[in-house]
Image 1 (cartoon, rainbow, N blue to C red):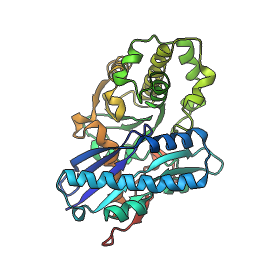
Image 2: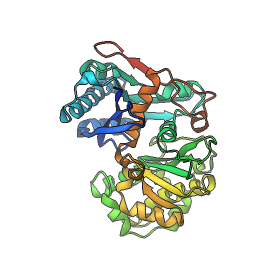
Image 3: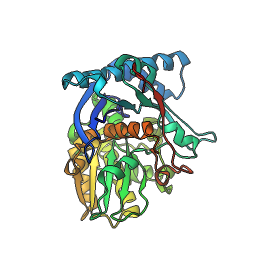
Length: 368
């Protein structure tokens, strides 16, 4: 038996995604999943920290423990709902909630919270966490980490594939059909700007199915100005986060136009930045497979399909894992890699000087 739980709370901060995988079969198998809501007061506190970029240390300390409790509850609810004992799970892989990601600083760093001591204590299950900082210590960006899992799960000898994750930030993994190195990097904003704009003007956490954006008109002047951001012209490896792409970033570019038209333009910004990178780095690929919350934005998906033209656009459901659970599944796999003493990063994706075993291990009640 080789069962692992992966935990992922993205930049939308609406829920903790928990996925239980069985790695004892010839190929990893998703056994169960659960989406655990994040209470509004925790979301608000996290948003305030991320928006301000600085805070009192006791605020971070308290949130660290509260998130650890929440992540543990997500695991135990997943197990209870599916009649599985904690003793039957080898380990939990927890990404944690990113507060700040600064690989470009003179002294690079990245911060994720969600105390793994608390997760291990409450759940009783060995917990692996703090994956990103070892890659940063090895000279990498600490992101994206999912390309190693994409390579393991989705590479084909018959098809060049792009795995496109559209979370708050979008990233792509280019999987050539031969054994060439995997390319993976962040392309820029995914849902984060659209979600923030919808929250500000509609009072909703996101634009349901992209219907608001669909009714607007793209403002080409605004789009062109946004596309001038230096991040978009950087060569990979590269990574970014909501500490860069947020409403404060957008403010200097804003033009005199309706909120709905600006939402339509932010949607097209996501489309253009993704498509530009695919055309530049994966123009020979036959298909793009989407995962992450962006797959639910029907308008975004249609606009992306139109922009990509002859390249087929699908979701990872076609490859065996539903798009909502790929990232959580990746951290279950990364926990397994760590316990086995195997590298979890791909230097060609993160820029690290060499492969490294990621994260730290926090033993469960019965040890590792």
